[in-house]
Every structure is written in C-alpha cells, then in structure tokens.
Length: 313
Image 1 (cartoon, rainbow, N blue to C red):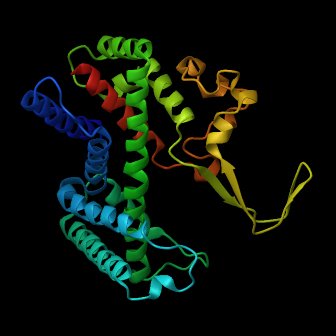
Image 2 (cartoon, rainbow, N blue to C red):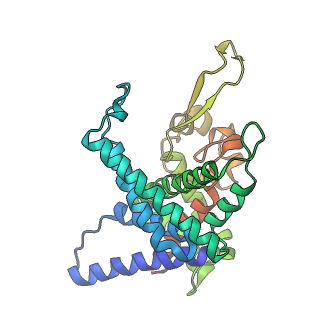
C-alpha cells in the first residue's frame, strides 16, 4: 500500500503548495484538518480499493455520526430511544451508512476480488463462528462486515492524524532532530519516492515517531476485564471488574524512563523499545497483549511516509 499512501500524501502537499503560491509569503493552513482528510483518504483506498470514492462518502457520514454522538447526554437511561432531533439524525445516518456498505459488499461479491481490507474482511466472515461454534446466518455475517468497516475507519484515521500533528509540531520545535531526520531521509531516498525498503532504513525517523507516541499517545487507557478473581500484590480484583491501565502515566513515569521522562528525547529509542526504559511493557501506544492494535504497522508506515514526503519537498 506504500504507493497509494505516497499518492494521497502528494495530493495534500500539492494543495499546500498551491495555497502558499496563491496567498504569498504568509499562508494559514489548518494542518490537523488536512491530516485527518489525508488519513481518511488513505484508509478509504486501503479498505475499498478501486471503490475508495464510495468509501470516502461512507466515511464522511461516519464522521458526521461521530459529531452527533458527541452531543448525547450520557447517563440517562433510555435517552437514546427518544425520537428527538439528535436521535433521529443518528438513526438516519446509521441507516444510510449500513445501506451504502451493504451495496459495496454486494458489488464486490459480484465483481470479484481485490487485495484490500474489505476483501480480507469478506474472506474472514466466511469462516467466522459464534461462541457456540455455529456459523452465523447471512444477517449476522453482514453485521460483522459492516461493524468491522466502521471500526477500521474510526480506529484507522483519527489517532494516526493526531499523532502526525504532534510529530510535526515536535520536529518544528526541536530543530536539531528535524535536521537529523531530514538528512537521513535525503540520504536514503535521494530524489526518488519512498518505497517499503526505504522505510525500513529510517532509524532516526522511527525514533522520533516512537518518542512522539510516548509523549502523546493517541489512546488514553488500555482496558481489560478480569475473567477470574485476581490478587495483584495484595490488591484484590474480583471477576468481572474492568481494569484501566493509564497509558500516558506509565509512559511519563520518571522511575521507568529516567529524570527526562517529560522531555522530547528520541535518543532513548536508539537501541529499540526493549532498551528504552526499565520495563519495556510500560511502552504501549498501540495497546499490549493479544488485543494489540491490528493497524499499528500501517500507522507507522503512514507516519513515516508523511514526514518523508514533507522533507523531500
């Protein structure tokens, strides 16, 4: 998918260049909004392949749905069933999203295969089983596909866009690290576009991104449910209790990371994550364990490519 990511990133950068040429020396660009649009475009291409334009329309509706959901008053039992303005808008958007995704699924099944995330979901849905070991019916299978498409969008674009904004801000703040990362990119890429082999050679850039994720993790907590009674050093956790692991607190702990834990210092990752702090498991920007983020490698590729393209321009 590297070529697709490069193509989408170049479109955004050309739009920035056009605005600068039009506005002159001073040009105001809302970087965070453009980065969100860029990552949504990349996820649309990765998920829906040649139908990514239809995918972008679905994702636009999902974004509208998220904005409406953010206005809901939490904690009032039964409130979501009331036919008020917000709830009617939510129901309408959900229906439109589900209908559009169903159309794409049907179209893919009729047209054939593509190497994208939607195809992987479709193939996985053929063999998925319920907790009772019984294959689900067509309605449950379609629900599985639709829900996974929604999850990929929500988890696949906004956290990466937020991390990209922090990364660019930190590089702008710490000129010495910007110079080091730029020199590495120019040395590895020369005048060519990045490819997958070049990405693996970006040690300094990887360190910068890892430190960005340490200081400003996109997720707040890792949440797990105790399946049995647990005793953790005298702390009794009963079965069924939710355990919240605060990512930011762990990743800023002076006892784990040293006295400069609150400072931007990518050098701590010079020998990899395992040697960056006293307990490597304390670094969990993508979660930890069996349910670690399925898109972490795609996110790293997107972040590296974005910064590389900026330096090459």
